[in-house]
Length: 273
Picture 1 (cartoon, rainbow, N blue to C red):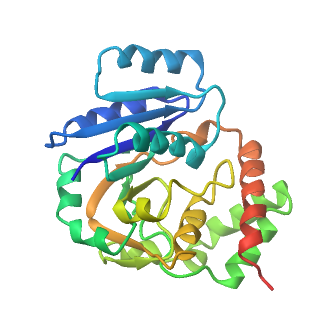
Picture 2: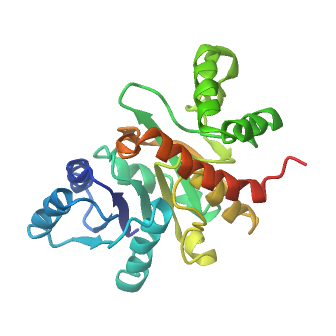
């Protein structure tokens, strides 16, 4: 099994270096790393460029503009498919993920899963102990879909809805993540990290990326389901996640506007009628 990692970076290069160091500790001979910088500021680019001079097995690609999350990952995937065709297992995700030393070993232990599933979602745990997978086990309810629509009607309404959701979290939160110990097929895996196997590349060249950022979980699931394929959650493959380390630097209203555009595209495929 040949492995590669593709991670995106945007203005938090020190986290990228920590992710690289955790990959380097894997007890495995052949690992290729591709880092996609989405037009970070000069300081963060300098950090990566300085590090690149010390490493031979890492490919750094510096985008002239920020193309977004999945489109950024596709640049790395496409580079690997042209320059490292023997890499049949590609781990894709954010740069704010820490890989334990047995991460690749845990994937190898579940090699048979890739005979049936093109994408495996791992067990993602935040630093404060919250489990983020399985993100959505089955489809989202109509009531929750309606709430999403109200949320994106107006920015100030969205703030009110957020406050209400925090007050009623005990009643309104989904309980999917409480099943983090149970392996199985899922509708959506949390977007911070995925493992793409040979079956994915047998059916697709890269990720479907119709938007800049957000809703990646849905678009990947639909890409698979359109071919009659499903995603699998495997709890024995574990990573730690420094959640929202990139998006926390985006102004709230700008972040809401980005998500609103993605929601509009999402609604084209998930109708409430």
